[in-house]
Length: 88
Length: 298
Image (tube, rainbow over the protein chains, first blue to last red):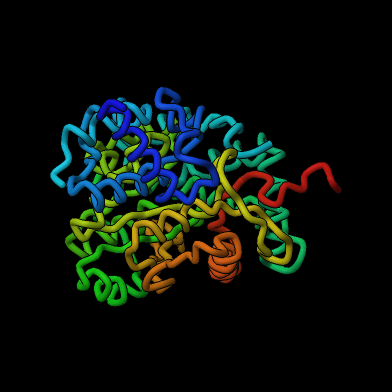
């Protein structure tokens, strides 16, 4: 298993845990939109994910990041962003 | 018909007209013209009239007079006129009476910011004017802008500084901005009386009949983990407002094991608090739509 895929499943588990979703982490398609269509998360869920990410990986997702639309677009993008910025 | 689908009926044209008038002729003329403007909206908006009548019937405990129904239209127009001044930071000539500012400052002193739960009752701008002057912290408001996009963009041009303090809902990072504001010990205003069409709601008693209230504002307050107050500013006369800050919760904690029941208790509490306020200020209720989803049912 490549490290990118390992990271995706780690982040999927984090999302399921943070949001108390009644689904298995592997059921989150890496390319499907997280918000609106697809998984159907909302901006409060985004906040909860951001808080969980900062607790687990030690860096903050900030609102002034212009790439937020992209970062939150899919599990794949989010996992890649975390991998690049994590400090723990 | 839900409020999200209702058009911003002529309000943009009326705003442009009022803005034109007050910049050239001043407040007094603008105020005098509120009578024909409010009369126009009163006469041309049967659904809104019915909505006001149904609300007032419950709030007053009797059938309202035509004059009382008109009064809601008038007060709403008056708050729009005042918004032209207040959004631009022009507070000269305004009398803003404040109740509970000490309680707000007490919470700000804790350094965790404060969430202000509001409703479409009175003027958010008056509340913000007080918060702006009474405590030297940042004030932002979370708002559904797509529903009043024209009005929002009008005020963005009119008072850019205040407009920047609105966080439009809908983007994934909207709530991150709210969180960051609280981290800077700022105030975050959230309107908790309207359901945006999508999203989770619960039906709780409001003025004797169950009405749908959104869960989102309370879930958000729980996640943001900051003190929560109820805040509103009611119009009491020409250029006069009464702004209230009331304690609501030190923290909103939602038991994950029984989330729905925990949220129901909180929303019930919020609704009963706003019920008291709505009864006390029945002409400041600005939900001009079928709040109880009962039109067509007699």
